Image 1 (cartoon, rainbow, N blue to C red):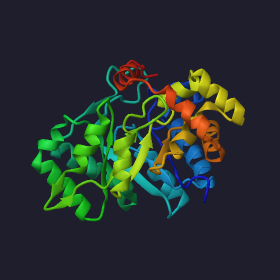
Image 2: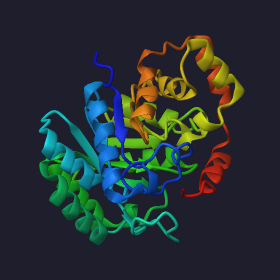
Image 3: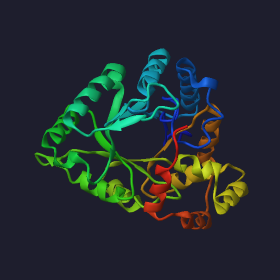
Image 4: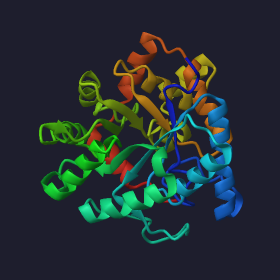
Amino acid sequence: MPVGARIAVGLAALGRPAYINLGRTGVLPPGREFEAMRAATHAVLDDAYRAGVRWIDVARSYGSSEEFLAGWLADRGHPDVTVSSKWGYRYVGEWKLDAEVHEVKEHTAARFAEQWAETGALLGKAVSLYQVHSLTVDSPLFADERLVGALAELAADGVPVGFSTSGPAQADAIRRAFELEVAGTPVFSAVQSTWNLLEPSAGPALAEAHAAGKRVLVKETVANGRLVVEPPPSLDRIARAHGVGPDAVAIAAVLAREWRPMAVIGPSSTAQLAENLVATKAKLTADDLAELATLAEEPAAYWRHRSCLGWQ
């Protein structure tokens, strides 16, 4: 199996100058000018492709991620790349590091129509999965028949429709979303959720989704950099025992799930990408996985901590 067969590269940390990931500021181009970030994105995509990665994940709110990816696909001509994107947040940071607000969320039929048109204009038929961005159990989407109908229509037209989740009630959102049907046909065929060593609470719901034949992707595999910049002692010890970094162990733990998720990584440089991809060679033991399972935080506490991570 190719090194990158179960790895997807996400462009959340490269498509805009500011993001909440830790360990990012020292590896990005100085000044983070638009063209420098485009070049950095293309360099990461080139290395990822050479390593066998064939899935790229972007979003309308990831700054210019769709534009950067579209240019790379046009330049390189790779016909075998799977592209997933998301709608629901609009990037409003205007390429400023110190923007007061970087993105605005809106789950409405109008926003979906607007952003699907924008995604299509950039990526066209390259999009293999279009996802609702950060669906929560209390999202207005669930009561919006017009929006649900539009999503079902897109799926019927041949573009698989999924959703990503966030927050301490991810499992509830996953189960509720997969119950949505239009004319007896499920609306969603894929889910992308946060699962990492600190926040594994969505695991049972993701296992159910996998068993039901849904595609499962896992994001925030290194907890927005927390597991790398400030690794718990046990994670650090296991990483040193295997001769790899804590990021590789954290990602390897995702790949070890019996529900076979695609692990979405978010490197900010080619060096970080290379370190992340070592995960495919890290063979964690049952004892390793049992010890790593003790790192889980209470979900509400995890998400409170995440909400305090500043854009940098």
